[in-house]
Length: 210
Image (cartoon, rainbow, N blue to C red; front, side, top):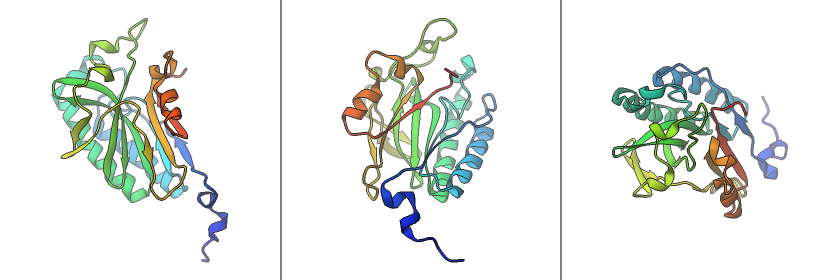
């Protein structure tokens, strides 16, 4: 079969194909959730997607309360992040997944950016809701509480900070940043600062339907 001329590729004209994915979530089962993610990552790759974003805490489930503090769950989350990194490389897609991530004895609600078979960076949530049905401060610490700007995942030290800017070296203009749910509603959203810093695609991982 003849290959299409590069002119007909959106990439030739500076476009980036972005997908928002909503997987079936298995409560507190990172391995099962990773399988759901992988199926969507492969589908995205087959459809020419460049960047796929998943919901907040998609790898663990959002409403699992004190299960977020279980060692077994957190360890499995980290194992499955490595699995997803490989899947994203095979599909040729950058994937941004939601996960509870430990740094020392502190837990953060994070967006984990995966590409080229590795963790490219981890973005902790800046603003934690603690009203009505939300009580994230019971488990999570805000981004400002971290003591360092790197974290070790899958045996590698990676950037760990809000407002990280990700840029494709071979795709001019493919520059993105991520924030998480409540961050968008703050008076000074991380996405605003990221846009001013050069991000052209602003991702918001959310477990809310609002």
